[in-house]
Image (cartoon, rainbow, N blue to C red; front, side, top):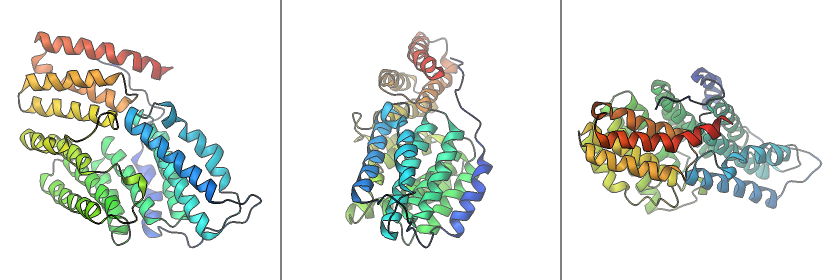
Length: 348
């Protein structure tokens, strides 16, 4: 079960200090108009947003290693960036920069999902700068929240708390409720990694409240945040309680996460299976842990995600106290056979 972790370069949380500070100080440039040879119009903007949405759907369903998710970087460099040198008004420029920021964010998340954290950082920093150029506090808040989540996953929850709180505080009067709700969720996840149950709960409560507000009063919300639903919040709450060593609470939250559709969120469902397996292990329930572990292995062939693979390996490692149980040995063998092809392909 020991395998290499394929990354392009190490993660450096300090690389976020300057761009985050600049965005918090001045989150919006005053003018986005630009003179150029080629006129940028509505069709260009629609194509840009459609490419970002398509890449996000592919990433959510199958992981960052899929064709659609990985080609978003090519589209960003060859289609979106050249448009920035075109001719456009302030209004068109603001949307152009915001859409380019979203493309860069999706490219960053796909890179993160495949373990390329330095590349993900570069995309996120680019996305934050584009959001600032477009004067979009909503996009900037979301990008900064993604950066905070990356810091949490890489083992820097203290810094992640600061970034998530900064994203929320800077935009709480102007960003869409669902975007703010996600910022509070990410803050709760960082607090959980720090073992602070009180602060995690204090952040999760407003996340749930803002999400309810967004569902009750649908307004002009951006389409790219539609993935954050009550079911998604509940699924993350399972992980938060698991991280806090509260398996009973984690399993109660799981009942609310049940509506997540595997055909739409295949990777998320697989990640949830691994979280549930480890929560059951905390509860000393090996039977349920094995059942969820087997389901995660079954879903594995449909997902290209090093992050999900690492979580699956973590389940087997967590079963070390039962390592002589024939069922655990069998799951270990199944997991090994499932992950070896994907890691070999990633190495290529």
